Length: 409
Ligand SMILES: [Fe+2]
Image (tube, rainbow, N blue to C red; front, side, top):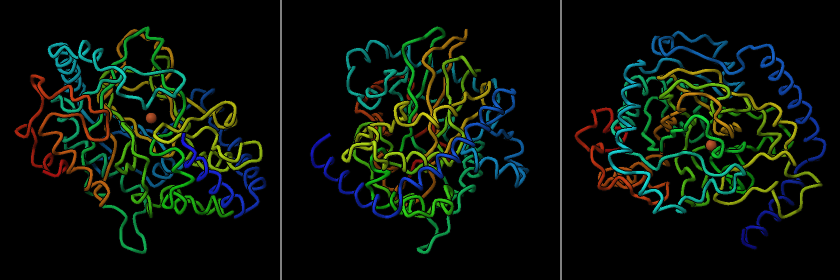
């Protein structure tokens, strides 16, 4: 990290620390967080579902109770089951495997190793994530009607109204081309330690983030609403390969295979209050003036036992999900991928988040569309461009009318 950024951090921390008694504010949020974590642990130990779940059928028919919506808002995560039929997804999984094999991906990846630095600071190292964006199964899953309906439901969990008009259009979602994970059973080397995406030091330094988290930074922590969309589409992130420059209402993935606890898959801390703890933790006296508990530009924002012990206790695995189920989490939710895949099946997913129509996302999809047409890696990611000459890559002809709108084409 260069001196200029360190100086910025120092200056911003001084400002933020002057706005309230940060020790007192932290001790309140720490107490709440400990209670939240205790509740999560208790539910998990009794074998109860901590992460709310809903069937796609109920989403599509608008049959989701207010109570369940509130639970999703409180947990910051939800599993939407059965967005795709199992057979469809099993076919996609096989097709993706064939796409990788036929095009000799692994050999080409070895030659290009080292381009993707994003995950290198996470202790567990690089996961089995493939730099592929335009296989037919990925494109089909992104443009599916059921996916659009699911994202619409998720986008509507946000309060979009703001003084300058709606922050985004919850009814129209754009495609964000992301990669795919294929994790072999027995794999021990490739996990991701607990982290948040969508910005690291920006969460303290960026003016839009400062306003999003205004209540937390100004001593009115109780008034903070994680679902208030105002300013969320106006943040600016340090530019780096694989830092998402689209605004996502939810990160998410679609399961291509069955996976659950012990299968080297996703764990998360299901509490939208954790962000208050995280932000105020970095402003405490025991953290050096030019440091934000290790937040680094262009990297994921790590949660570390040294600083964030209270919340890390709340990390729970997702329950068993089946092919065609989808998992979603709010951009401020801490998540990880287990170090050891102890199951017997591949744990495969296609990353598909929700990224609604707004000026920020519109600017990105036009860049993305050009990369799609050329078969290049999506613009947010390392320019590995594997698929430029891949056989069976999706092209313009594979897009439905909805798919074209979502791609800005
Ligand atoms: Fe992540």
